[in-house]
Length: 110
Image (tube, rainbow, N blue to C red; front, top):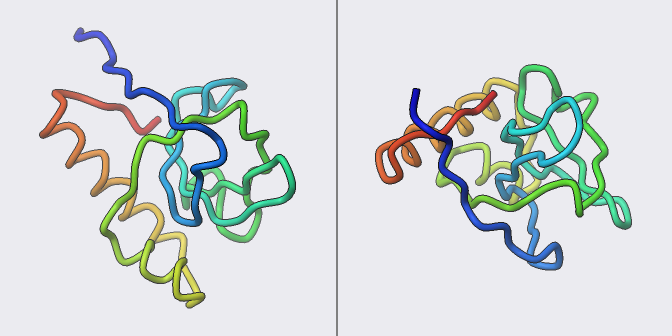
């Protein structure tokens, strides 16, 4: 078993719509999500599986870390305001995890 690689967190004020973040606290710790909205000091997160677009997770900024962005169709849709499906989110996170695994030697998406 290889140790998990960590990616340094970005400051919370750098978060943008469609960023990929990792939960650092709670029972979803270590899972990757897309930022699909903001609510004050909270971000709205969805991954298309456990947290679907219809019922996003509301999580404090300090309990997440930004890990990057994807070049997936989900990102394009989120930024342009088009309807995003749960399948788009799953595919985007899967593609991102595959890219990160190739470049960094391993990452889990939970």
